Length: 142
Image (cartoon, rainbow, N blue to C red):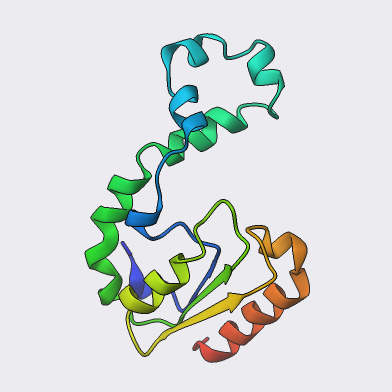
């Protein structure tokens, strides 16, 4: 959004883009406490690879405010946007696809709902995601 003139097309796979649908979960609130941070480097951290829990928390806690801040700017984008949402996603609400259809600029937005897919689209269906990338590249100028 900061430099749309430098982007020819965007593929969003299971994106967290809908402010009303993104809320920290109980474990995010727990990991955001002074106690959890104090336990960093102990048993708690060893339960997760490296700093995964704390790094993801640093993204999740301010997410609603950040998404709300960028919401008015979606309409400025003129490049092709492809949003792919797995309808069995437990990390990003599948209704994000509805948000994309309602909020992202038309006619350059395409929303794809995959009924049997979860959040990990690129890992579970790499050939399909690769084909979408090629298709997007074919639509964009060199």
